[in-house]
Image 1: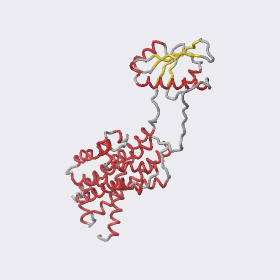
Image 2: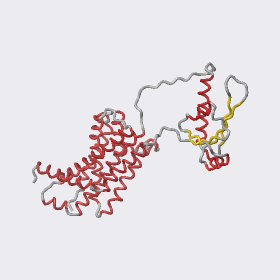
Image 3: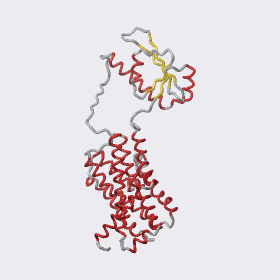
Length: 368
């Protein structure tokens, strides 16, 4: 049984049954696949760069046939509310349900073009939306002025040149973070619970009598997690790509490189799970210890928002954490087209974590 071929066969057998156990575990499916898919759907549907929606009530008697009103209707984030009485509008304004009440009236002074008065009535509950609304209305009026008075003198002429480039969507930030989240949950929670269960149920003790080496058991468990991660990975990337237009710069080549890069995260997070399973004496202790490792990384490693939002000293700490290195690398590969060998510092950081955790996970391995 000590022959290398037999050890490989044992590892493959262990990985097969471990994968079946994982696929039959509702907890593994929920935390490693369902939760990330929910986050991808929710955050991928949010247009971060779009201005906030503004509700604007139209006052009774407002000139809705004017060119000003027609231009205001084209502002994307404005929702014009018509048909409300003055009492209803005042009540909605007081409650903060609308930003302002607009009234457009024709000014009958003699000019070369029609002239209008645009009056906004707001309240203290309008907040910053009122400032944004004023800016948008000013810009709308200025656009009409530039068309109506072509030769009107100006102190400067603004020119904008757009260079070609890829569109960075919200999903390009979120999806790599959720891939890291999935691998973190499957590696830490999945491995620690499964290995502890095998030890508690005397499965490992029975394997010890049929000389299966520790490295074969660990390799089998890693293969199992790798197969499960590949399935989850492909499902999440497919939904991100076909539904939310996730960027894969070089197509399938980028997808393959992301999968290879995931081996770093798999080794680190599974190693942490092995260490936890070797330290605890009862199953109830796994969750608190795993949460101590997992939750800080979820909050600090840029899964949902950039770590640059933190103070500088916290950002420096976050940038050294394994999940940050892993997710940052995935984002560079997917959107920027960076190859693994072009990220020496990121790869070096992940290798340091791997070299520190794998020996500890082997040493903490217990048969019973």
